[in-house]
Length: 213
Image (tube, rainbow, N blue to C red; front, top):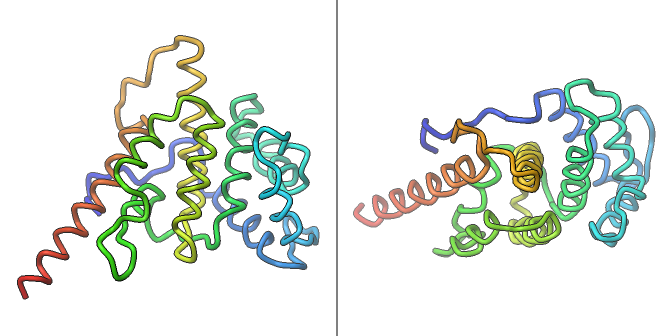
């Protein structure tokens, strides 16, 4: 990955990462613990998968326990409608992830080559469609498809969550006619494009080098 690629989180922090990691780990177990309480994580995950964003995912225990820990009891995240909506999207999308893989940013993982082939996990066309999603529902459904394509390779859940929170913040600003952030490196489209195309170019370069050898 290029050294110019912004790697820091914009909305979330390291404490939020620990919460997300623990929550997702619990979802993989029949008897898992989150915030000191035991849950049937696989049951919670199945419920999150069955209930789409349109069907009040906030009524699901898997979402509520995460919201209670990540927003309600954390002063670093304001209790705003935008943050709760972003968390609903994240909980819905994360339930379809097979693995929490934090080796690289989420967008960079989408442009990695599928083993044994030349195709990216998410094509450039689908990636651009993801970035140009017009509604939260559309963004959510396209993210679910992208996460499913990653399969057993998994995705960087904290990077994904941070991107969702940032997308919702930008969407809300557009809905209210507020100006975009003047710093381009704090805009989701710029950050994700840098990650996606940097990895894509590096992969191509490595492939060409190996061919010459």
